[in-house]
Image (cartoon, rainbow over all chains, first blue to last red):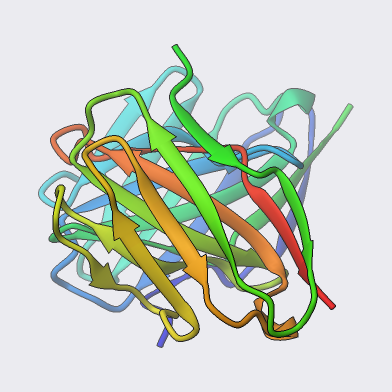
Length: 110
Length: 112
């Protein structure tokens, strides 16, 4: 039973444009939502998070939006850069558990 | 500042063999996790430890055991390896007040 779902396996975007990565969840008890970025042969690295009581958090080029009624969150990257090409994982916490989605491969074309 | 260190980085096992994956963190974090990553499945939680002396099952605990040796170290043991356990294993630690986890570089395990 996957509680965090990323339904798009991949996304291709032109350099300079916006990248939008989506995530849906089923557990209304999640406390925090997080995005991680992963390059090949490396561990995931934390990117940005949002509390379940907020609807937006921004950090430089990265903005996360949370729609609790739809149980949906998204990560916006503006402007996209070739170095952003990686796998992006959506994750969520409840209690001491941290659960992940399946990931979305982002390719930014120059 | 090493962060989260996993050993070994690569391992090939024969079916039925046992081995222990080691993980250590130097960030004084309370919580530690073991995940496996398989194509199309993302990161699935095997076991986690909220604090020294406690461990709990995650999504896919069958075939694994863990030991939280002290605050720094959290090991994952495969008692009798099976080909279905071929995967990349990641250890992570977190101080949940930060609501983010730091990951090791992974162990690529192949069971033949």
